[in-house]
Length: 257
Ligand code: MN
Image 1 (cartoon, rainbow, N blue to C red):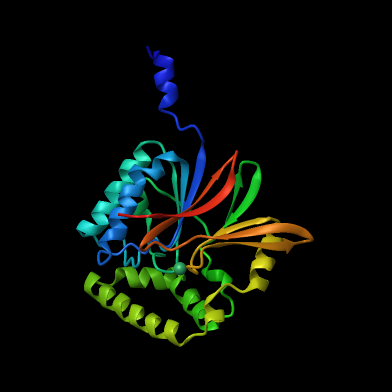
Image 2: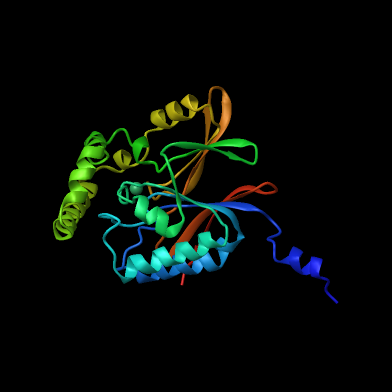
């Protein structure tokens, strides 16, 4: 017969893990990814002690006052998840930088500044979305400076929803054209910037998304071996980086329904 203490023990995950995801680009036109994420929260995500979402969670976000059944289902999923005392930290990406207080309140997520250093079982880890590492893309960095300006954001959010929707639609079309024109190298991170930032923050571990090139890179920072983990974008598969004390860091993909 199972005693009460055994029952309580078995309900606690054996391994306490920290999960990192990014670049889900949630979009009502990709319902399989939306469903995949909601399923993730109920399954794999339940093994997390903490969940970090490192940007581009949504494909587009024009303000917390925009809502439809899609945004409501994602918000409800996150709310249920954080209600079970799993903290969720959210970092803005270049697509969803207008996520604001209301979204955070509704979901129970906590906003993280880009970049942020966290303690990962005694090891310092630098977390970023990753777009600021693409310093070769001068045009994008200028665009970023504009849209991250609080005055620009205040003006944008004061516009009627229909106006914001059409601006976002135009931006998306322009960005699609540009991405097509640009060379492969420009769209990846600049190695010199990666090394500069890691040295600045005195870390041997960097975790970021944005480039959709999931991988683990080895490098040398200040004469010491270091690692850079790039999270993957969600599509046919989901991606997450899992870290626990026993196994360290593991970047994996998994099928989503
Ligand atoms: Mn991005």
